[in-house]
Amino acid sequence: MLIRRHRPNIKIFFIAYVLLLTGCAQNFNINENTGLDANTLATSQYYSELIAGASPKIAELTLFTNMLPKGGDLHHHYSGAIYAETYLDWIDKSQYCICHDSECKSNVGPETAAKFAIMKNPPAGACISAQDTRKDNAFYRDLLKHWSDKDFDNHFHEQTAPDQQFFNTFSFFGPVSNYSYHEGLALLKERAIAENVLYLETMLKSAPTLDHPTLAKRLNALNSSSTDQQIDEALNAYFEFMAQDPEAISSLNKFIKDHEAAAAGIDDAKFSLRFQAYVSRNSDPAKVFSSLYSAFAADKKSPLIVGVNIVGPENGYVAMGDYSLHMKMLKFLKQRFPEVRLALHAGELVLGMVPPEGLKNHINEAIRIASAQRIGHGMDIIHETDAYELLEIMKQRNIAVEINLSSNEFILGVKDEAHPLQLYRQYAVPFVISTDDAGVSRNNLSYEYLLFTSRYKPSYQELKSTVYNSIRYAFLSEDEKRNKILELDRRFSAFEAKIAMMANSRIVN
Image (cartoon, rainbow, N blue to C red; front, side, top):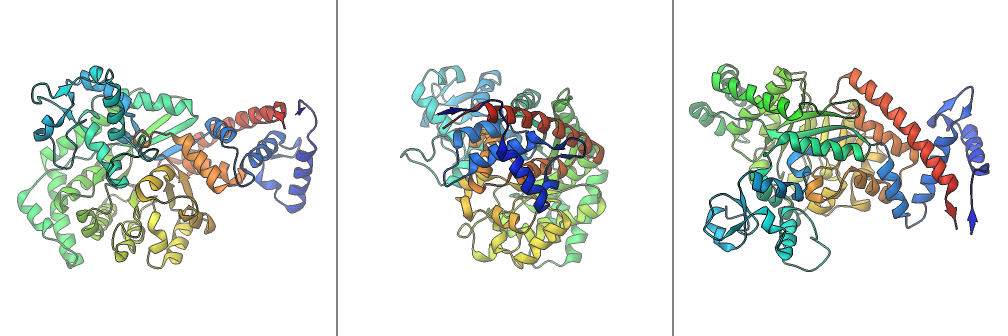
């Protein structure tokens, strides 16, 4: 056994020499006066050792990715990011209780298990407080398994399909998820800072809707055979109504104020927060369009709201049937609010989840019709019509894909070499690493980077570039991006100095 401490590292100088000969030195931090940055090279060499071979050094790589500067998390659902333990803390404060047996059945929807649901005014004796929940260890463990993906696949037990398990969790903690947005965001900020994250772009609450029965009837009558003129006429009528109706304006202002109150005092020198306004894709057309109008209008009116998204299980009956109509709605609104940026969930589908023809158009239409600037998930790219041409468009337009490795594996069963991340990398389509719903998946952004590095073994240069992408493709102003990139430069300099010191002082077998 050797102990290596503070001695010249011949490998570093050899690597530097080779890089200079091959013209690759431009990938590292070069200073004309001092020469090659030894800390960057030492970090690159150490990282290469961690991912080398068939079995990466997972423990050391976990430490490395925990310390790694992260930039931003751009695909992030607030309610799915909060851990179940925090929601339990909010149960009693909200004067709710938790169903302890099947007597609660009459109080919940047929798609939700009777036990573990959050209730008010349940049958006598059927509901217990969150405090009492923690006293019953078996019930507590089962609750965590229903409210998240905990223990789903590490032992035999009765379970639903993975995608249903994932999306069902929201119906359990949903009633208490709005207890205190500010408290929740403060917790998420604290967690982000602890893992070296600079910026969070989250989806807090759905944009408000307003019903107009006559106009809604006309809009809801639209279908796949409707002409573009019929669609535009129906959308324009609802647009004019929403733009002028006092109730719609009041709801919009409240929506903005709720976000401002939630974000009050969150931004500081270490961390920044922005929001995407989002809409559910599994409602009738009038409700979807009404909510989309509110989302676009809120984005235009509030500097805190920086983008618009559409969410929900993409394989749902309504989501599949109305997908093209939704993209045309987005196109219509984008023409009237051209400065609004779109990060659309698109292509979160795999073969077998829907018929083959259902995999052909979602990313295509999100980009070609709705003009999305970022794509969330993008999993069905390999089945899309003219996939190669689509990849070229994404590359040329710098349309980044938000890669969510944990949820893609859990919901869709796609991981390792089957994941289209490899295709995006091969065709130089930009991408970012993000969490999706860290509370449901029970992980964090550092873990997503661990999956990225251990499974796909990017070079240190690519890893670093991927981190910077999370700021380059953020929906921030150019000045804000420049400042964040400068901060990332500073953090990487400190990170690489620490890694170089660690690598030089460790015990080597």
